[in-house]
Image: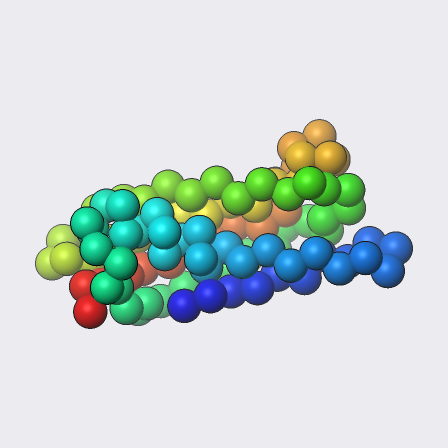
Length: 93
């Protein structure tokens, strides 16, 4: 599962794949990268303007072999502004 965000500013496009960050974080908790995406929810909060951009992820172990991951995308060049928040749920494949 991979979600790509396009951040536009003055003709420059930056692609950030926070779905990959979520999968990597989930794999550390699950102990395997053999995971299947069950759901995702993404909220665009503000426009990315300056960069560089940072993705922070927080995995949370669930029941029945599931893992939830909260992913936050920041614009570090714009006072560390939170620009996107996402949540993902994975299960062992």
